[in-house]
Image (cartoon, rainbow, N blue to C red):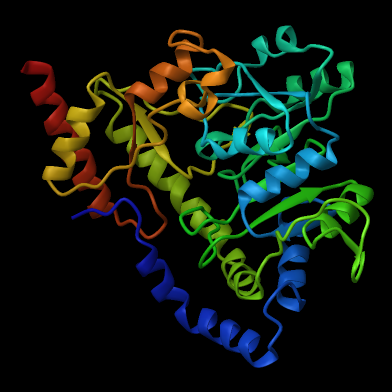
Amino acid sequence: MVPFLDLKTQYAGIRAEILQALEEVADGATYVLGPRVAEFEEAFAAFVGARHCVGVNSGTSALHLALICAGVGAGDEVITVPMTFVATSWAISYVGATPVFVDVDLATLTMDVRQVERRITNRTRAILPVHLYGQSADMGPLLEIGRRHGIPVVEDAAQAHGARCQGRAAGTMGLCGCFSFYPGKNLGACGEAGAVVTNDSDVAARLRTLRDHAQGRRYYHGELGFNYRMEAFQGAVLGIKLKYLEGWTEARRRLAERYQAGLADLPLLLPTEAADRRHVWHLFVALHPQRDRIRQALEERGVQTGLHYPIPVHLQGAYQHLGHQAGDFPVSERVARECFSLPIFPEMTNRQQDRVIETLTEILLEVEYA
């Protein structure tokens, strides 16, 4: 069996460091926020090149707080994409705003910047691009549109730890960048965690109070706050793993190159890395019209796959009230209908990957000549 992800092998390689860090947290008896979270915040801010990092309890919470700090509220609109995990839109809904969708570009599967400006109205309060699968959206034009219209850009960088666009790190180009450290992410905690990075000191200060019940000082609450604090155990784990992230990313990039070479002649639409970007390959997502048949055949032959994501947000039941129909965002709908994710993780061996390539090749030949 070739697993889709192998967190046990990753853990085995750093087990002693992780256990020591967790033991130190337990001995110190500071379990929420505290020095290990602060140390991680400082290290992650330096890693991405931001002035501030504010640790929270999930990527969803990071998005929620970032939109509050961007000034988004009830009755407002936020421009985003339907081809993403639903948490992107949850955050918009949490602040009482409405997600306004634009389609994705088929080459990069990120926001089609050509569609953005015509969706701006007098109610638009933010633009929320998603750096999907590990590749940054085309941020230059988006930032220019935001500047021209006085609209902040908030980046959903949940899958893009270490990704770059024109030399700038994902998450550092807009007002805020929002990261998830869910266990399966390129930088994953041993549980739930997230962070917001920003270069705005006032925004950072507000984020720090909002995550902790909006306490400017203890028991004084200046606005509605939230219990979105990062646990110390997660800060400790992330601090250890961050030291290995660049090496893990280079392993992912090498694996992606091997996939692209080994699958190049097959009837698949393969993912690409835009010329001005650095892809960190959180996922390697290919497209084929007979996706479900291919996935089933791979599973039967011992290759696990993933599915990210089979229903675009505009067709989810939770957003029926927006009135969208099939056909409104054809690229996103095609991707959702045809996408499947192949195994890609830093500990993956060439032998495992060769098995995936060989098995997929056999299946596609069978499908073609059936």
